[in-house]
Amino acid sequence: MTLVVHVDGATTGGAFSVLEELPPLSDTPLHVHENEDEYFHAVEGEHVIRIGDREHRLAPGESVFAPRGTPHAQRRVTPGEGRVLVVISPPGLEGFFRHLAAAEAHGSLDSEARESASREYRITWL
Image 1 (cartoon, rainbow, N blue to C red):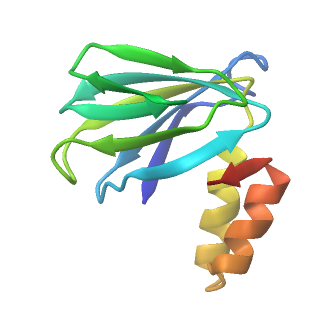
Image 2 (cartoon, rainbow, N blue to C red; image 1 turned 30 degrees about the horizontal axis):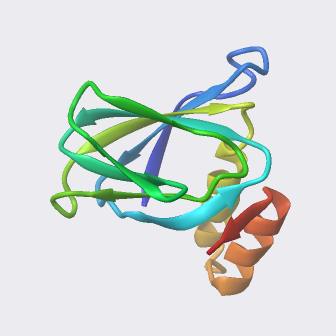
């Protein structure tokens, strides 16, 4: 996956970061962030955001909030189509993706690298 970091914590004075996934697009399995709240805003396409036990179907222009500590997942109604902006507070989660990108650049993106990054950024995959 490719992500654009529109703004990071350094840009916002530590307030938030904004990420967007670019093609090829993939869905995000159920997981929990210990440190970050996430706000999902659909830009194109339809998305299903699961937060806890509820599924929220988002059309362009619609948003939903996932508080830290709450299991959540994201999928596209039409696989591979759509855009969503994710606002993250506090910032820092962009480091998780930078960690994985560095591992990929060094040819070492494997399950151990993913587990290491998940531990560092306190993400639990369910």
